Image 1 (cartoon, rainbow, N blue to C red):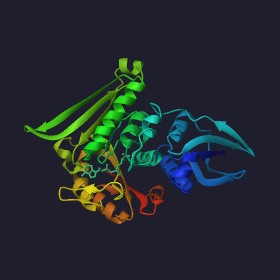
Image 2: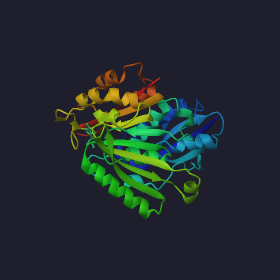
Image 3: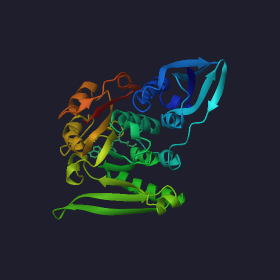
Image 4: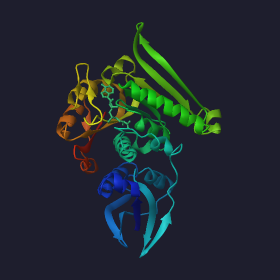
Length: 344
Ligand SMILES: C[S@@+](CC[C@H](N)C(=O)[O-])C[C@H]1O[C@@H](n2cnc3c(N)ncnc32)[C@H](O)[C@@H]1O
């Protein structure tokens, strides 16, 4: 048996205020069960020379594909093989496209933390029937409450296509301005266009469509990715998006602090009414075998209420152990939790 020790990024310890190892253990367990098909086990915190690591074991040395999965763990910083009292570094292959600053440069009130967004995307794709292909298949990720696009940018880094919906025109403008500048500065082949979306002669939304390739070779071979952001009310998503347009829905609901939840009637602190109105439309947008991961503030919504909203028409909330221990304290008014459901 081979023992490994995963060092989590120092930034994760700051973000998760002492909860980074617990959340990473849950995330790694989800990878172990689904992506890594049981090849990794005995996941537990270990302290080596006073430094905490997430330890785990494997019956065989981990191969390239296994390491590529591990490199996607949201807090992964460095991996070591434990040989007696020595640590042998094991390189984690880079498996993300584009520079990290695509995610880290934008700073604004109400931004969802990048590492947490990655945790949520990972847990959602691992719950879907695409778990075995998450490194190889061009999936489509929808964030139906996308703010200024943290999920969309992460999806691009994963090699996926992305769709976002956001009601606040200021966010949509700021997103377009940032993306144009960033793509130009990185000298990446791209096209960014804004269009009205009409239905029956009536304008139902406005959309920003960006097409981008990670390299000139990728561009020549047609390996381009697309990100589309709609300036619209997410409740009306079916007016401008077709059923089955995405594999994954990954979203962080308004916390009621920096952002409220908009419904046609009012802007509320509590996202319940918004979710009750929007989830049926979102579920139609999801392909069969896809999954939907939602994070929320437990001060505003109980996990059971959200689970009730998500379980209809055969959708199943994922209750396996890694998915049950994800709540984390953010600050006095915010404790975040995550519910993931799959559409069979
Ligand atoms: C928690 S924020 C998302 C932040 C995002 N993940 C990011 O990092 O930029 C929730 C977003 O939902 C948006 N929102 C609230 N009600 C909406 C609605 N009915 N339709 C579309 N967007 C809405 C808010 O404007 C806010 O930007």
